[in-house]
Image (tube, rainbow, N blue to C red; front, side, top):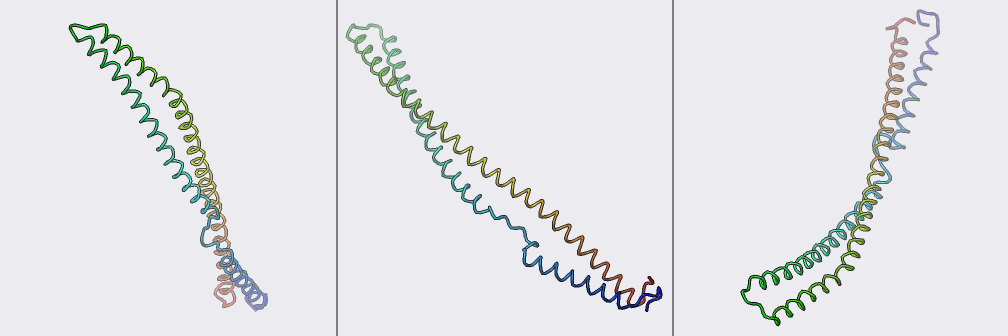
Length: 185
C-alpha cells in the first residue's frame, strides 16, 4: 500500500495499461507510416509535369512557326517598300518600269493575302495550345495545393499523437514514481 491507502496493484495495473497504449501507438504508427509523409498523387503530378513539358514544346514550335510567318510577311512588305523607293529615287522612269513595279507589288500583295488565312489559323492554334499549357499548369498547381494541405493535416495529426504519447509517458513516469514511493498520492 502506498501512503494514501490505495494498493500498489492498482498503480502497477495503470502503469501497464499506459505502457500497452504506448506500445500500441508505436505499432500503429509503424503500420500506418505516420512517421513519414507520403502523398499518393505524386506520380500524377510527375505525369502532368511531363505533359506540361510536351505541351510547352508544342507551343514553342507553334510560336516559331508564327514568328517565321510574321518574318516572311515583313519581308514581303519590305520588298514592296524597297521597290517603290528604288523607283522613286530613279531620275527617269519609263512606263515599262512602272508596269513591272505594279505587277511586282500586286504579286507581293497576293502573297500576303494568301498568307493571312494561314496566319489567322496559326494564331488560333497558338491560343489553343496556350490554353492547354495553362490547363496543365493549373492541374499541377491544384494537386500541389492539395499535397500542401494534406501535409499540413498530417503534421497536425502527428503533433496530436506526439502530445498524447508524451502525456502517456508522463503519466507512466508518475505512476512508476508513485509505486516506488517517490511521490505521495
